[in-house]
Length: 302
Image: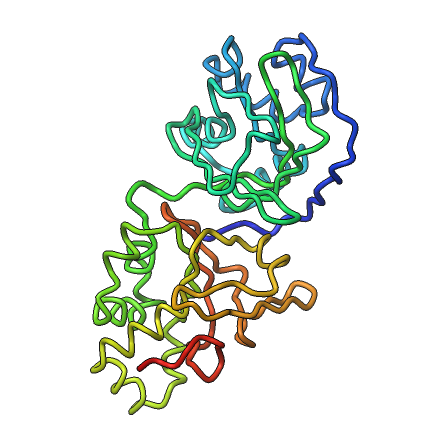
């Protein structure tokens, strides 16, 4: 599942004047706030559990442009009623009105679709499942708070941890999967975290000298040290990489992030931004080169 996490949304500054909560019903609140497409979608797909809810609620509301893109995208324009119910339910956190001050990094919340959302707080950006969120100004009623997003947040299917996501894409990551198993890191990437993995694809491993790769595959300890240099504690989506010059590797070294326009590198290795993935226990960024000690500040394996 591709991680659609680069948004053109710009977060408003923290000096925004707070909006006084209104007493409008939900559909009226959405309409008066300009979320016409979301209002129509909730009605069309009979989302009465959301429309008629009387308990507190948090909504991550896609812009009208996001709905337009959804209808025009060849992959999503023919979504079934059931698929749209899932997509719309994923936008809503029932029984919780999350004010900006309530949001914590790595917070996990349940949604009306029975899925989970991961909220992340970075120095200049906040995200929900990797989608940038405009936290302020927000729209409120006495029971509801609405935050604008410019894309629909995606959610990994159940059981799609970091290792399983790679394992299901062996046409791209078969060498990395084998290396993880040789290094005895499978369980760590399945049950640990949250982690961010800079994942070398098969082409990245092919770029290594054949003898070097063969030696690594026969040296579990050295291979483990190298692979852990690709693992970051915590979830860092693309929005975070844009604002993080250095990220500490699991080995204790530093991975240096550089941004040039929309091009992102980690230790001078290109991040393939369109191929990222969200998982149950973190995020995966695909890279086109293996991060060896010569192109990382992580300590040399001993």
